[in-house]
Length: 102
Length: 240
Image (cartoon, rainbow over all chains, first blue to last red; front, top):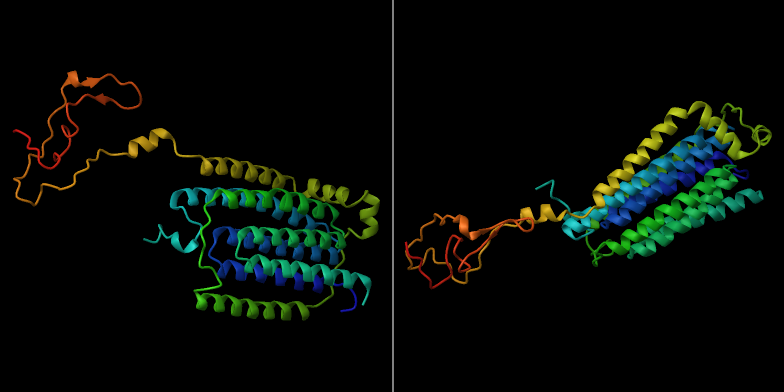
């Protein structure tokens, strides 16, 4: 690996995605889980742009742009849900939010 | 090792360490700060990948907009000291880490054994240069083949804005007052004690007692507080 190849970017993307996934699985604070989801979306973007760089294509960058737009919409709705949730049950602990289960 | 690889290694190591910091930090504000570090490093990596426009978008949208929004919400919601991660739930934590390591090994194996022969697309660096740069090339691709997805994205953003307004709106006062019910306070409830059961039918409200509606609810004039409740307070007997 003396030259920069797409493998570098794919490994970085995998590492970031898995760090985000472990965060989603192990944390209890809703806000931290939300940030880990953002981290996973960014990892996917790294993959897209790495492939686009390797194949001299623009389609990967286009897809990454759409991912950013959808992530912005997701952030707005997710933070709105967190606000409504904290107003309703006054907690950000994901383990205490079980109204649908009971 | 070429200089590119060294720069990439530094950037990616910082990005991954900051991402680990997002997961491990106790305080959500520290998580957000680590996330900023990760995003800025990723923007630099995008520049290395000849994606200039996306690097700018990354900085503006993620670190500029989304993280400011996250910080606002962190300061608005009530944070209590969660027994996070550093104590409790060891099974779930261990399962998460082991699953993560297994998945990382799998993906690394898949990446390192993939066939490297890929067809080259039309957008070589020379073609991008002749189109006028990364932004122009991206615009050409975006507005020739992806017009409908762009409009769908606009619709998605509009719906998300309306949804956020609906979710973040406080309760209307009309709904809140309708949920309130008539209640009475009694220190000793007469039912079940030596007092005979009281008549459960409430006396009707005569028309002279009702004042015309002033606010949202009607006003009923009463001589005492328990004239219209089920059971009077302790010690008083209602004459039948």
